[in-house]
Image 1: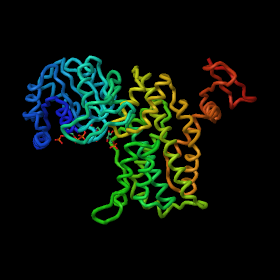
Image 2: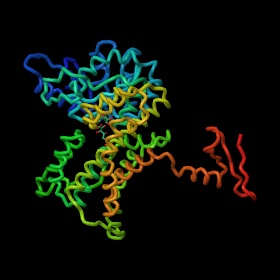
Image 3: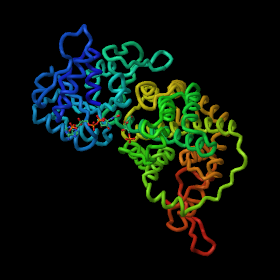
Image 4: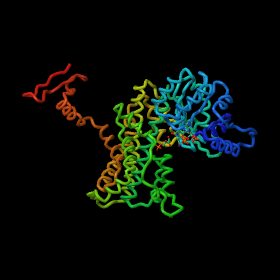
Length: 491
Ligand SMILES: NC(=O)C1=CN([C@@H]2O[C@H](COP(=O)(O)OP(=O)(O)OC[C@H]3O[C@@H](n4cnc5c(N)ncnc54)[C@H](OP(=O)(O)O)[C@@H]3O)[C@@H](O)[C@H]2O)C=CC1
Ligand SMILES: O=C(CO)[C@H](O)[C@H](O)COP(=O)(O)O
């Protein structure tokens, strides 16, 4: 990521001094830069340094040091090394890794006398870093003013319709269009937004996998056939980078065996933590983000490969699938994917709404939807619709309350219901589809059985309840163990 961001900066006319603990990696960057350098440029745009002090001496004040190391202790280790090498209070250290937002809040305050610590989360993988990522900056506003031109030039760009303007040609970066970066707020705001981006990324990926699983196991489609179908879906409302790459992946064959490559890849998913953090943050703030959490759990369940193998012959499914109309099921799954995706994004944005209150940020949801339209992993035409929804109503509580999304759910929800029924009847696990439908039905229910739950809490623990016919906030307790069970108002 560091190598590619440095090359991207060089393409946009910035001169970069770079350092890595591994000298070979520095040499590799220099060799790539020399190979890709346009003929019109006669001197190296990236200078390799042997140590941090040498790197700092090459920079003009206030120095901007962009750090791309694994999240956690390595970020603090690099900060300590930079302090020892002579950073000044006006210098800006930008952490571009997937750091936890609470670490960014801590670091900004902990290092404030030594330098300005600024967070900028990056999405788009290595290609994004090279040719235009989505950048999610958070930190002090003065540092942002200084960084803004740099980040706006290297970020991905979208056209007036919100469509990414893409390039893969070194030395010919995209200069026109709207940059996929915007200041998101102080301290950890950028890293929080990126974390939610990744939580949504987990949900998006899991939902596509569940659609694939249903098409494969229910309809018996081959991976390449599903890949072709995904290509078709990618022309419609589901248009997104993740559907596009899934279509490509499913049409790839293994060079060694000739089998579909996907069949040769072990079904045990990895995770670095950002999806889990999203789920934890939602749980801590009491925000319903079940689709994201189910997507984290689905990865966790997938890793129990040995146990699953044992259970597959031990546990049987009582399956009852009646005759299937393949075309109707295909359509149902496509609609299910769209509805579940709407619900997952509704959860992600609802979570950010809660976080801004918790951390005293003022998140710009139009801006967030816009900077996710290009460069990042969840880029999709759908994000323009989210930006439109927040343009129409800046205080929108939930995407499901926007007319466009409400209409889409009304029109396509039968597909989600059918897909969930078929999955349940055929024993195909689709936890995120289930969760999406439960969220939708829960959110649109005026009455939920939480009244019984409150009574249960009051029964065993005198935890009290509110009454539908009393002022909000007034608490009551029924003396369940006493004769006639009197109710008292609790002060
Ligand atoms: N890869 C991706 O697609 C994306 C990654 N990110 C985030 O960007 C950051 C960097 O990612 P990526 O480039 O993939 O990571 P890598 O694992 O490739 O590590 C990047 C560099 O960090 C260096 N490093 C590791 N530990 C230390 C340390 N204690 N002190 C100094 N340097 C150290 C490594 O040096 P060496 O190996 O030479 O020792 C390596 O060159 C991470 O936070 C990641 O989560 C964000 C978006 C996408
Ligand atoms: O941040 C990213 C893209 O936005 C990374 O690709 C992300 O780290 C991948 O996460 P995981 O390894 O948990 O699947």
